[in-house]
Structures are given as structure tokens and as C-alpha cells.
Length: 348
Image (tube, rainbow, N blue to C red; front, side, top):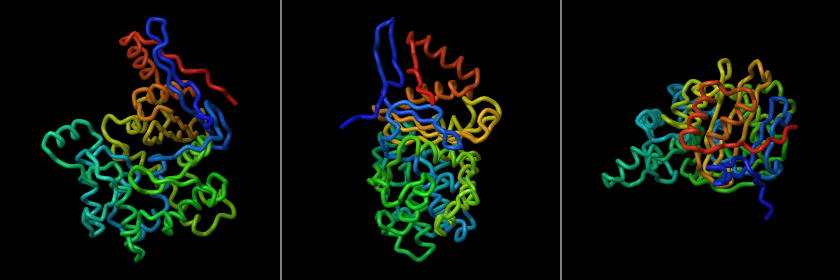
């Protein structure tokens, strides 16, 4: 098998090489132009939790119609990989009450909270993992609620041949200009179907997310795709308004959306995915009037520290990184007496 990875970040200690991180980077502008690339751009990557905004989009029109008590923060939890903090659990309990169901309807993999302090506290107390604490619990409840609303058997919501997954694949295929029957499929860690796209295709989806794609710009779309895309702008609204529900405190995607690293006047939408995946949408701004989509994938898997450094370097190369973030990064490097050098981007 030919691996798609190329060097993204090297670490030297006292002029000797100590660490090298490999992966794929793709940056697409809103017109579909590839601005930055690293690694094999035609290789398929599993989208993992970076698919969650579109998983919600596939039945968002149903939820809006049948559950008027749902608030934007509830929808933010439905597309989240939440940390299991109290605000996340409270929102989930409110959603269960609105849905009129109890916790046993959730079939996501039982887990401890990803917030480490909570995880260690619960483990020390002898508590067992539960679906409630799992980072995908909000997403799973969204599927259950949508199926219940239209009279379908929601106990089968995980099955990949269900109508909501066919609708989702048709929408994704239309947005990346592919045949939905060609989309590769697997089972994610939370037991729901997951799909594979190239880094430029996934970046294109996030550029569309950041620009509030309107159906009027999608000629000849199927009717079921039209119903789905009609609510596209709601996704960026709830992510921007409730970044702490999308991730949690001290989470990279939440910090990116809160503007911790980007220059004034630039708004980011961000989503962490399992096994070293990060996606960012850049809202239209002075520098990029059509917005941007950014994908970073590490071959080594989960490594939030280094993927954060790479994300800041990518933002810096795009002139979107604020000066305080540059200074913070430099001081961090000096503190550990490391020299970080991002591999040269191949620009197109």
C-alpha cells in the first residue's frame, strides 16, 4: 500500500533531529481552488467526527419541524464531540426531556468523559463508562429524535441502509460532485456509519459550511437534497454561537472558534476528529472573500498538541494568525529548547 503521508513538522533538540510528524494538509478556497497542499491529495480519508455537522444536517429539517423547544445550543451538542462537562450533560438531559425518551435509547459506545479531570474522578469513584458521557451522545440522540418524529423504528438508527443515511450520502455526494453510490463506508468508533473523502473534498465541505452555502447556487439538485441544504446556514450559526458545546473548555476546536488565535475580523468554524484529524472553515473575510476550508490529518493519530502547532503554522502562512498567538508559540518553543520547523508547503 502506498501511504499518502508527507512530513509536516520536524522537531530538533540542540541541532539533532528528534521527532517528525507526517500527514496530509489541504486548503481550499470557496471557489474550489487548492491553495495549500501537503501529502497525497487523491487519497481517501475517513471523516470521523468531522462529519458531524453533515450528519446533523441530514435530518435538521425534521428536528426543526417537530421539536420547536430545541434551542441552538441543543443543536450544537448534536454536532459535537463534547467533553462530558456539566453544560453538556445538562443540555443532553434537556434534549431527552424534549424528546420524551430516556437514556437507554442511546446506542453509542459507553465511555468516560474526555475531560481528563472528570474521567479520573469517576474512575476513582468506581463509576463505569456510560453512553451519556460519550462524546457522541448528542449526535445519537438527534438521530433517535428524527426517526421518532417521522414514525420510523428508532431502535434501528445505527443501520447503514436506513433512509436518513441514504439521504446524507446523496447530499454529500452532490456537494463534492460525486456519485453517492461511490462513497466508501465504514463504522465509526461510536457505531454509526462513516464515509471517506479526499482531503480537498473534505476541505471543500468546510469551505461550503463557512460560506453558508445556499441552495440557489446548487442547480439540478434532487428534491431531498434541497430539503437538507435549506438549513445549511444554521450549522455555522450554532457552531459560532456555542463553541463550548461543540468541544469544551481547553479544547482546540472550541478555542479556534472563540478567536483565540485568529486575527480580528476573521471567524473560524472548527471540528476535531478522531485519530489526528482537524477541519477548519474560514468565514469570508477581507483576505479571503470566498472563505476557506482547511484539513489537517496526522498519520500518527491523536496528538492535539502537535496538530495545534501545525494548525497555527497553517493559519500563519495564510496571514490569519494574530500576533499574540505567534508570541505564545515562540515562547513555548524557547521554553522547551525545541526548534519547530513546518515543512515547506507546495503551493498551487
